[in-house]
Length: 587
Image (cartoon, rainbow, N blue to C red):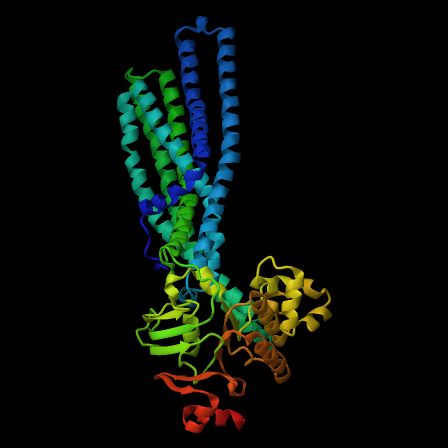
């Protein structure tokens, strides 16, 4: 994401935003027609006043009751048209804005789903949440009012200029010559207001991140009695947000004050210059009255633009922060005409595979070559930082290799569709993630729309059916946010049931039992052994006694694959694996 001081140009933001109107162009066109009708109704009034005043001064006899009633009826019809047009603008126009906001939020979420693990490791979830929720709230008003207010303002300024020139050209030129001054003020304050609003958005994202972090870790907070520390952290973020609000209001106050002063100067010019022209017979009292009414309309328009400026800048800030995510490239993409991986067997081959993270040129894996046959069990052991998890993450393309290639059943995984590739791989992680919902919903996530009978069968195979049945509402039991109502072993068995339901030919077990107590570990380990039968399995092992029967054990260190073989071969070798196993066995 861009630095908050590095603002996108307004023209670029508008250019990227305009396509969202395409679906609603008919609504937009009708909205602008209604806007022109309300503008015409407003501009006609001074002309009627001028007409009646001129007749009253020059030919009072011709000003009959019938004429006045006709003028009144004409103006009444205009007001009815104005009311109907205004209702459409306020109702359907706002709904159009809400729909555009909804479309943008949908596109933003869809793009977030395409971004790789690397993106989420570099950006706070709270900041992302702020961009997909609060940042887009102002889009409704912006999408509706921006084209409407600009169109109305432009129409009023042009029509007013033409009419006022018909009344008195020199006075009109004097008035309109002062308009560029206000636009300079607008540009000066707009830049600073937008910068202040962007700081506000960024800070509210920081508050979201801090609150999320504190509330998700509430058990740790309470266990260490650190509520006061969390309050201080929140208060610091809250205070910074107040400071950004103060800065925004400072520029807004300066903007409104300068425009108020400008408005007073405009009235002064009209009254003084108009009076001098009237003394010299260059403008009639009726024309001066109409002139004052038109200037009032013009200033009211400028006032509306000024009031809309804050909304405009908030909308532009929301669009900018929206585009910062939309312009973040998806690191993992499908090639054109990507192939479907059908009936995968589970033969996996690493050919000269190397990998380093995009922000670090230090290689995590270097020139790895492996040939794993269908149904093989591969265990990865070694010290932290050796690349065990990274190697497994390359198979479903959570990251892409920086050199070499990985083949599944003879096909380069980069030539396959992501859906079919990942649909053939099941992952059971140490840090189990359960969604806020029921037990059934969490297990059926492995096969959306699965029948309850299939979910129950998967739970039985995972050794989870017994404890699920004992829950208050069985499979309809709400598990809480991140499964907080369940124990670690229970959550892990639900995640295993989810993979059983998915039934993938390739399985990745990422230290799936390391965080469990001995009793839970035994139950989960039995479930994992049942799950692994007939599949190609990669096991990242924490407890080495669980991988003695693996077909292949890889000892990974910072230097790459230090040792490779079966448990018996590596024990007999007496190397690094022997030392690791002996150390674990002595515990």
